[in-house]
Image (cartoon, rainbow, N blue to C red; front, side, top):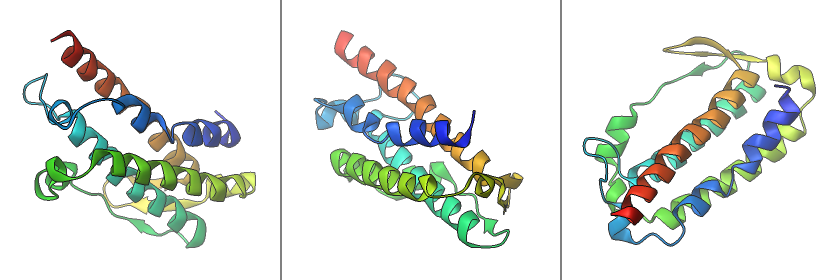
Length: 156
């Protein structure tokens, strides 16, 4: 997929998390309809955190020469950052605003910028285009889980 198409898919997902959880109560957000998996709340906060990290990585690849991109422990974030106590709607708003602002930056880049590279400490070399594709797909991947868990909660 071409960078311009990916940017529009990326930006188009800005409101998707908020829409996916609209109308759910705090109890529903923190429920575990599938044992030993994350709650919807945890997925929402994970999406916010990972998107903020993704945006930082993309900005660094744009602005710096071959920056080192550090991985993060998503399980530790979920366990130690009080995900169950944070406001899911606020996280959705942060996610939305970050995506929209990052999309403005991406839209202003020439096509060759998407070949710029950074080096991920766990995965090795990655291009800006790789990062954009990964995080566009990351949202779509997790939205499936949110929708399935929501369906299970509604059906009881």
